[in-house]
Image 1 (spheres, rainbow, N blue to C red):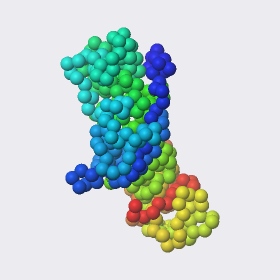
Image 2 (image 1 turned 60 degrees about the vertical axis):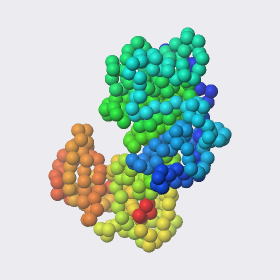
Image 3 (image 1 turned 135 degrees about the vertical axis):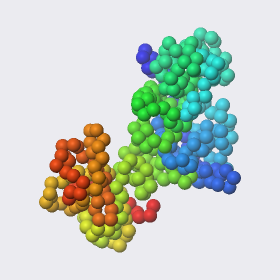
Image 4 (image 1 turned 180 degrees about the vertical axis):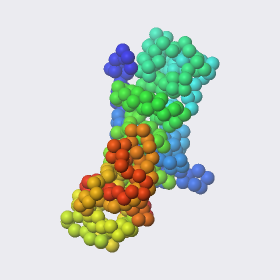
Length: 373
């Protein structure tokens, strides 16, 4: 990134990617079940989900390594389902670095250019040096993979994928083998590279923080289908169902029943008998009698002063306090259910396990989701 002119590296434009009614089965088991996606040119999109949800199969179909049984794949509205991988102008980065151990860093990065192009030696050298500079590995050209750390090897893998200036870069859990500190550093670098290049990035991960931190949009996948597709803020703050809510970060999900609903809001009754009113304007409305789940994010909760009168409060008993250095994780019993929230050491200075507590939140920050989804 130092001394690299972004104008020299930027692609003509990122590729727009569309999947239309795509399905794929392996030995009779659906790996992808009729999914449709529209990925904007130049965007950074993460495919997020648990193991077996279909995210890697989706990536491999976009790459051309797997052929769908049904549906269409399009780049810039042009069908590419039958086009082989080497003609799709894509770069690919895997969790395993897949470097040639007998080649230097320079030769590893130059390999795809030598296979696909007939650049002059000076042009090839310039392209390789640009790619290495972009991933902060200038001066490493003559080293071998065995002389590099895991993070440096992954940077070489990224440089190799970027050296051809692809309009689309596919990344399959590229940081999965690295320690947390290095993952955090490379997340920032990958996002910066994306901004400089203008290519479309599609990134597979099971790490919610990675997806939320790096992406313009997140595809949450479950059981071979798309559970939700939206901006990081949308999928976190306005989840479509309880799976998305609980998979993205920590979520307090309390079973409840809607006992009243009108233009002013919806009143629900929890299993402990407490009645709470949520103002109108939420993503969903439910009729009286509906079984729902009340969603409360831990960061939206706080300990309230005793005697606080507010409809957005619940009384409970402090069940557990877990020390995390700069904060405490609190578990509060509210009848048969529990709430989790965070508090500073100052806030809990006079508290002990078993103490009665009152938990409060801004009523507008609570959400209702259908039960059983």
